Amino acid sequence: MIEQVHIDALTGILGDKGVVTRAEDRQAYETGARYDSGLACVVLRPATTAEVSATIAYCVRHGIALIPQSGNTGLVSGSTPDASGTEAILSLDRLAKAFELDLDNRSVRVDAGLRLSDLNRRLEEHGLFFPIDLGADPRIGGMIATNTGGSRFLKYGDVRRNVLGMTVVLADEDGTVLDLQCDLRKNNTGVDWKQLFVGTSGAFGVVTECVLNLERLPQQTATALLVPASGAHVMPLLRAMEERLGAYLSAFEGMSGNAVTAAFAHVPSLKNPFQGGHVPDYVILAEISRTWAPREGEQSLDAVLETVLAEVWEMETAPLADALVGPPHEIWALRHALSEGVKHLGKLIAFDVSFRRGDIMAFCDHMKAEMPEKFPGVTVCDFGHIGDGGVHFNLVVAKDSPLLGDPTFEPRLREWVFAVAVETYHGSFSAEHAIGRRNQAYYDLYTNDKLKDMAAGLKTLTSPGKLGSVRFGPARAE
Image (tube, rainbow, N blue to C red; front, side, top):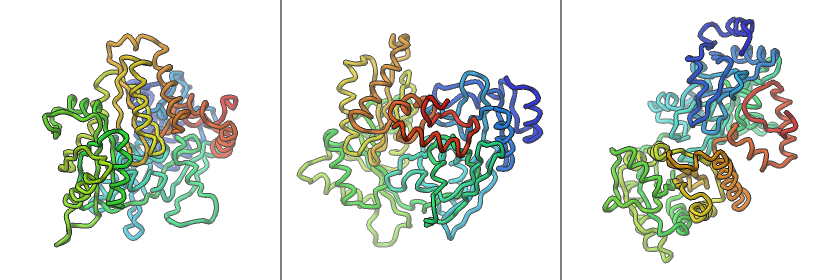
């Protein structure tokens, strides 16, 4: 799949630990987090920016296609190779040494291969954290490449908002290193070049180091499970809580009854707090937080939340049918169990879509009404970030369903869901998972031709070599 002369040359650059050739050792890199897999000709594991540069330069000069891979936790086949056996994986898993904390600036410089959990573990003793809350444990470079959001986007924003600077290696014959390591929050001296590499799936360059904005760790939190009176009452409920809680509100996560039921079935240790064990059709996880320790005489957050919910309960529109204030660790355990619970119901067909906040429940209600007629046997298990308009619209098919024997089933289902999301409700076909091979066809379909041409120009300008799994330009550019 790759000539020995190239293996020898790359081993000279990276050493024996930096080149993986055996099939059994490559498998973990070739297999994605959700169903996708491919075949790599080799896995390359540089340990420094200089090694990334030398590796990319060599591969570009010899026409070897590279697939950048960070934590390999992506869900749209963005970091796995195709089945041809001609693409090399460029893994960042050894690029995880740098950690330079600036307490005064409330920022940190790290290598892009550092895992999110390791970063936050080291920051915890300083009362800080990188405020992107995810169910997975990715590496920072992949978070930048996909512009991840997470459950607390409502308060802290996405990765794009929290990246101050970076170092990027371009896929050209020189392996050009761009030093964009600005650690300023205010810098209007020209084009903000770092943003070109956020959310573009590694196609324009490989991020090797980054400077991140940090936030104070919450010292007080309170959570509740809210049952809206109906889907139409979700937005009035959110507006009422934002009006009364302001910056205290840090999460507003929607969970369908099907998804919650799946989580309880898969994780028996979860506590079911609902009366008689009856799971409502829709539940919202609300969280409020403070970054300072409790003060004497200060109203506790539990009391604040209960007061606000009592006010909401008395509203003329009555958006709230029930509310259960409970321990944060128990309530978040339910939210974090949703993905695994849904996945164990059967074959999962997942969509990561977003809308104007006022349209998200209308979309979900529309799809649930239409699904039994258009695709009987498909169960909707949606959940997501209602506070920022995002929803993980998960569809499950029983493993013994005859639908799975029809090769046209999944393409027809995907085409319909995306058509309703994008064309009817004017949403996005990718809220926070970026593009990847799985979404390429929908990028081609829904992206303006002029924007494709501009993206192709940027790709040629930055990284003319074969880098990444995504084609941002028009199909004719290949």
